[in-house]
Image (cartoon, rainbow, N blue to C red; front, side):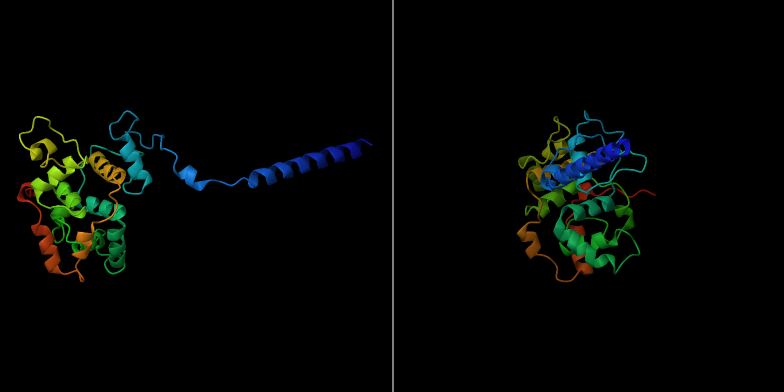
Length: 245
């Protein structure tokens, strides 16, 4: 009799577990809602919630635009090289990413080659197309202003590009007491990782996520040395770093 009661009790438990499993598995999981949840966790040891670029850094990381370091740090004040910025441009703009993927299988000699090939097609102002020194050294904020303004269909000229960033709310500047907008922007300062994340985050919030049609229409049919030279020539002399040994 005891064995029968135990058997009934066990059967009841099994049926209850199966019923609960069925009910919970039938509840739809809203992936879109989960994906839209704000990022609140401290992903990096050196980026606390009180850090001025906390939201931008976590967004850029979650979006796959920028990575952290294996030791769990982000190093927000570390300087960004031009090659690293080239990669982030590709990760942010789908058009550039599409072009760079075409070259990845053709040129594996240098990890950043495919990104520069894609940038040259769109004639984007950069210095490292044929110069490893500029690729592997810090990039100035003024050059970033030229790139962002140009890709959004505005001037690539330094003065106008900086003015455009202020006008569009893509920057608040660095030095309030600067005599010119370029000085206030800090155009000859080197770009940090935190600042880069902030620029891309602001572009995203302004829904500036695609390359302007005027830039697309001027796209080079074939990537040539001429388009690279044209792109390099667009960079203002003020934001070209002096080479050091």
